[in-house]
Length: 291
Image (cartoon, rainbow, N blue to C red; front, side):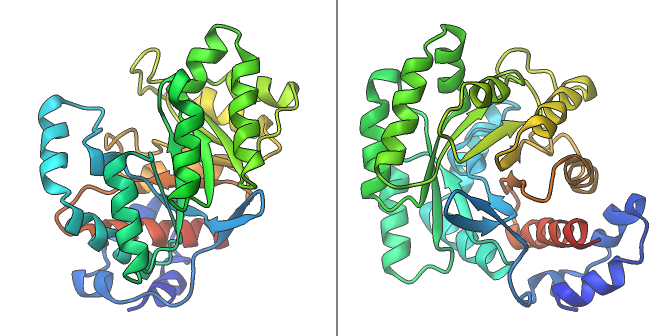
């Protein structure tokens, strides 16, 4: 059963049965190549799959424990990451988001030059304030197709009222003729940037305000989707699975019930058989887009 065949079968299920439908896919089916690409969204001038591969698990950012952080780092060798990138492309994803750290830049260059099947890297710049412009430049040189400023760095400047610094960073990305974005955990940030007419092309909005409270409650999720509903520009929702605390079916269904067709999601993978999870997530994305 290929992905589109599964879509036809699964579309008849109620939304409450999505998780069970996806779990019914056999491992052999999960490893079969899908047909065609996933639905896409547009970030400025760049079309990307509505499901973007996240990279937190690659670098050991579990948001759970130091032990899990270390397990993730040991698991994700360069060869393993390359395998996951190709598996994501096989499942219809077209983009990965990752910080432009040295290891990643070298890996992305190696991967791209060797014919890697995933073609788009979205850079998540997370350097300190005094290093941000250089980090943006390194992203451009290393082949990023879009760039956004990481949430904590945006929040540092927002909290101090340094909108001029944030604007300088966004304009620097735009000068490189790349789509420019900003991320945030705080639900009040992106509406304020839109009110101030920042020249952003897209936003990354966390589904939980974990930079302030580490609160994965439904109340925090409701604040996030209320923010997303206000935004006219495309939004990529992240941590939709609450950093592994939610079942995939629940997290995807809630996210896609509360984002617009112009919006997408970014989800990382940590599993022995990564393609099983990637295929499941791709199936949810297609089913919930085309229902």
